[in-house]
Length: 136
Image (cartoon, rainbow, N blue to C red):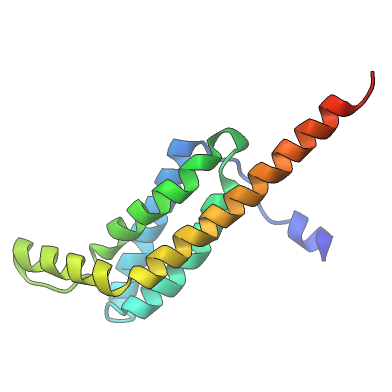
């Protein structure tokens, strides 16, 4: 099992790279959702969760705080192709309505990213503390 997990890619993204990855992935998934599922907001929310996990896992140690910040922005950016409405005003109203009705997915994904980042930060701090306590 451990060897199977180690075969997965393990990129380390900067804060900007994490934001670009998350935003581009959600925009692509939103467009794909609009084409395949007819703008299903539930499908979009489900697709949002793994992107949150990947963003939080792949961001480098120095930029851990950026992951919980960029995932809600990416959620809103990816909703643009999914939101219903005609014209600019209708699309904007559809976007605001989708953000209001899908807040559970937004908060859940942000919470997941925040928890992963917090665990990674605590482990990093513990590792540093052990390294400074060693004699020599």
